[in-house]
Image 1 (tube, helix red, strand yellow):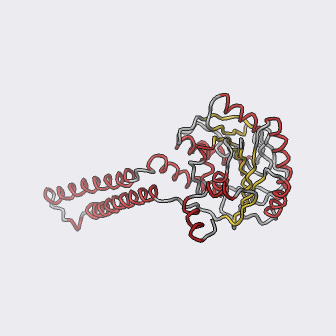
Image 2 (spheres, rainbow, N blue to C red):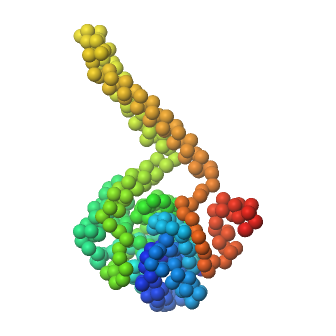
Image 3 (cartoon, rainbow, N blue to C red):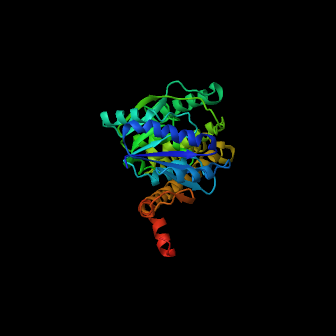
Length: 337
């Protein structure tokens, strides 16, 4: 398989059939083999039923149905695990991304020997206050904290070599940071200006409240990129700093007592020093526990953060090979593998 297109879907029934038609027209000139992996994220508008119908009509369509809504990151992750193409494309299912941009992205990737091409919505067709302005602020903050050179981290239209998405593990709202995470894997990266269109049907799933989730996930990305394998550096560093401040305050309190004859119970600095001492011990303990957890994590088998209720259009053997080891083992023990 040349191309795997991953579509996270949540209540996009009206857009599905037109989107697949556009994908067919967009990829026809390339003469490349492709599959579309549609991941329904617990839709309530009948999208899952339509996907079942479309899977019977179109050989290239493969469908993953979540049992409930787990979020866009989980949908991307499930699609990545199921992809079999040497190249992987992600895009939204709301028809705002243009499938006609995919051949241009492939050409850029091949000509420049890249690993990852990120779409940049040059003329974004969204509301200024509710969508564009918060996105610009978030993108600038992410670039400042992570050092990424990408400008439009919220654009879902992206092209990857499959070996890189195979190494990604997405949780929470981490799909916005895919570009940052792929860069962290050493991918050769470029941006390409892509077409962006106004939504024609359905409603947007994003609101201003999502900005706060992005800020919290940004903290996670900062920590994971710099300290994922050495959390003791963060917690231990804070503990040592608090311990040093506590020691300085205790020396000051002792000097006050011996030289100026100010008793401890009249000196608030002593109480502050004791609090800092306790906090220093706590942070050091947290650092050690985090080290143990990290080592356990990397040495243990990984378990996804989502549950798949149904798979349609997949070859059983190929799915089993791409399953996590704990899934295959569970199936063997139950006699269902």
